[in-house]
Image (cartoon, rainbow, N blue to C red; front, top):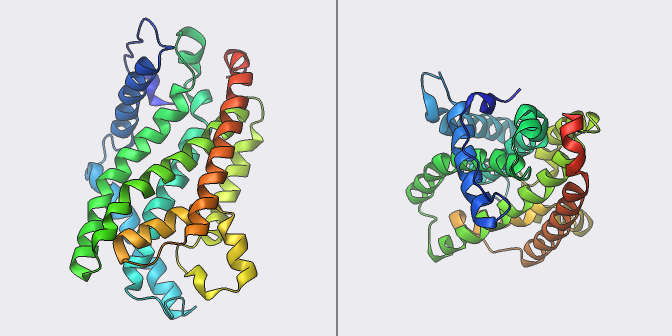
Length: 268
């Protein structure tokens, strides 16, 4: 059950308005972020330590046992630049999928736009991501790979958020009625790290595999991050497909969420 239930939430008089939805989402996003690191001695420092530690382990494993660094310059930075966006997506999926059910008492008792729960789950994860992003920038500056391509970073972040919102909106709308969705998401996240080009360069694969990888919307996202921080060429085909898939999933997610939201109070 979400700790947000212990937080006083002021609901705007006209929560259906986009401005009110944005304001409430921001309030709950900050609360989600604060709750995540509540009572942790190192607090928000964990937002940096966790991906950094995971990137170090993956680098050692894939260099020593799989020779994944072949043909990839600055491989540790390559892994870190893929792992941070992946961690944002995975954490958004985990928190966002169950967000409506986790806030069951609020869903039943308070009149507010229910879309605020998956959005604020993503927002809380985004704040943790923002806390870790400067580490990636410092690493790129030390490596000397930062150039004008860094201007692509806002595009990468925007596409990354768009992908997360689309998928989470869909899964969070299905979870209240079908609790198996949670286990499906957890299973997909286990293999998703390896189905996304986080620790390997998709350019080293054959044309067929590259084509399949481009269907993964995170492939285009990671291509933009590698361009921004490693001055690598952008895979325009992957970015275009990522945008197309993200928009299609977002449209589907919003339609399903709108259709099923009236059932949520009876299901949570």
